[in-house]
Image 1 (cartoon, rainbow, N blue to C red):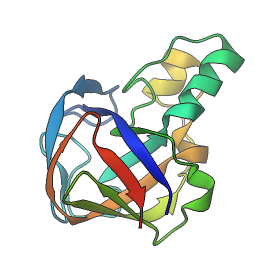
Image 2: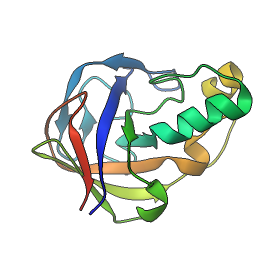
Image 3: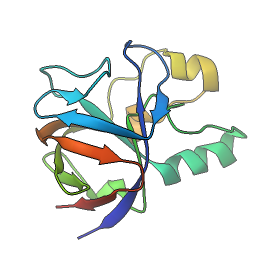
Image 4: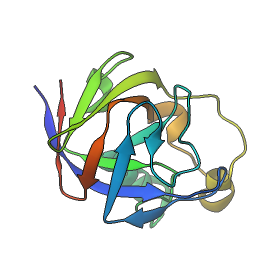
Length: 145
């Protein structure tokens, strides 16, 4: 079982905007992260991105992107996402369980590509729905179930 760490939690009440970091959040079953614009009754309630991918993009494109700059909700370090496919599950902290509904998404001109010139979610993002809600905080353990 792969284990990693929750590097950051980012939200924005509005869709189509970059997200900002918060130290902790309430994750609501079959809804998403409280106060995030992508929460709701659909398959992309929470977006996860590998911190290693962000660091690689920073190096490759000479960026200084940090938490939320790629519009992700959760930045996770220490887990190779290539081994986590559709229907894969991530456990965060003691309670929260996310199920991957899709890997990547349609690529379209977005606030991220306008700001950074590159986007990671269309290729590397894990889009999830919340199977079990709870409270998460920066630094929580993350494991592939």
